[in-house]
Image 1 (cartoon, helix red, strand yellow):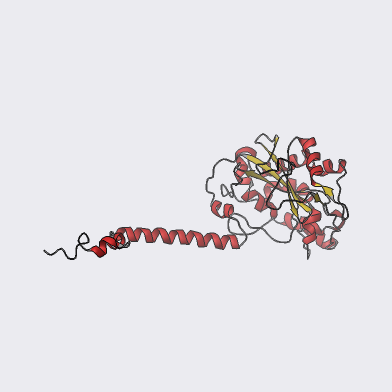
Image 2: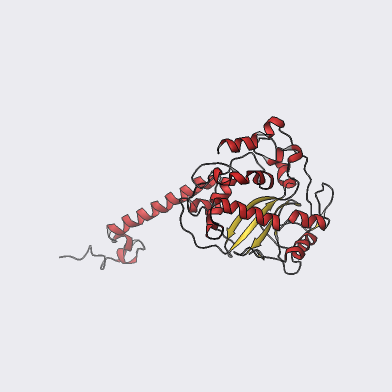
Length: 304
């Protein structure tokens, strides 16, 4: 039989870079196609979810996938004067709209389990938020852990809900090995917030809400270092402090956050790093009116 059509004797097959693919078994091509399609599907799914308001960690954590044990806690606090300045309209759930009852000091954003490499787990065990579990804490949560927005953040099950729902499902479920259930997560966070009272520490050092004063960032950091023997992480919007974070080990002993720092100045850097002089803006709350202001508590209690 002639060997003209043999790939071993035909120089075209020997030299062409696609030769191996042309003679590869059909199974390999089919398998590669399936893998390619799966990768494309996962990518499109993540893009859709992130566009809808999630993040990579939350998207990959949906469905309660088991993730590796976290390394430390990060208590994230918000400065209402900075966050609330972005308020364009009011609603009953927005803590910025409570008139004389609006928050004036740092409020809680969340207690987050983090990894030392700068990443974090999210949506760990699929347990849904139940507002009934924290019914006895609602007074404290409304005052010290309010939502500062009218938007409804995403939960870990494809829907939207309360600010506390988002924090428990995304972050709290990943801390259950240490803090336990939903009730204990919120109670633990409140206790840590009260024990390490950043607003009071700064007030005693002369750093108070003001729309005219600028304060040295190094002074704010030093005040917290002297009080709690840990270096905080700060984020700013322009020159206004927006978030301040304290980090703790799993026994809730203060430790430095796992971020880069400038060893010469001692100033902690972040994605939204602060200038050398910062402000703690005061905020005159918008008032939604007495009837509307009462809806916040009533709305929550109506679901219990």
